[in-house]
Length: 167
Image 1 (cartoon, helix red, strand yellow):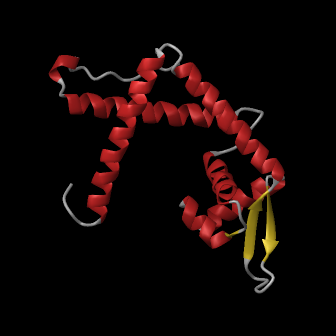
Image 2 (image 1 turned 60 degrees about the horizontal axis):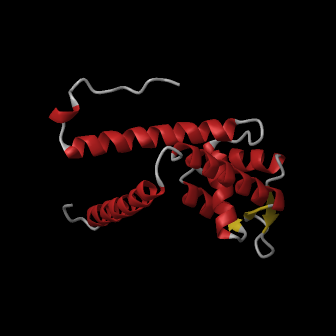
C-alpha cells in the first residue's frame, strides 16, 4: 500500500480544523480508491459511473428516462449512452421505448443488476468491518455519533451557501 503524504508540520503545530480537514481528505481519498479497486475486481468489473448509474436505477425502483438519469448521475447524455450500453451488454439493465413517444428511451435495472448491487454493497460492508475491526464497539458508536453531527453541520453550511448566505 502506498504511504500517505504526511505534512511536515508537527501535529501540535496544526490546528484542530487542519487536523480534521486532513483526516477527512485522506479518508475520502482512501475510500474512493478502495471502492474503485473493489468495483474493478473480476467478480464485479465495473466503473464508478456504471455503479452509480445502476445504483440510481436500483434505488429509484422504476423506469427512468435517459435524460433524467443523466441529470441524476451528473453525466452527459453522450457519456451515459456508453455507460448504459455496457451495462446492457452485461444484462444489468434494459432499455425500453416509451409507449406514447417511441423516440423516448427509458431504462430499468434487471434482476441480475439488483443482485449485483446487493453483492457490491455487501462486499463494501465487509471492507468497512475490516477497517473498523481494531476499534471497540463503544468507539464505533462514538464515531457514528460524531460523524452524524459533522454531516449535519456540513449540510447546514452547504444549505447556507446555496441560499446565498455566508456560512
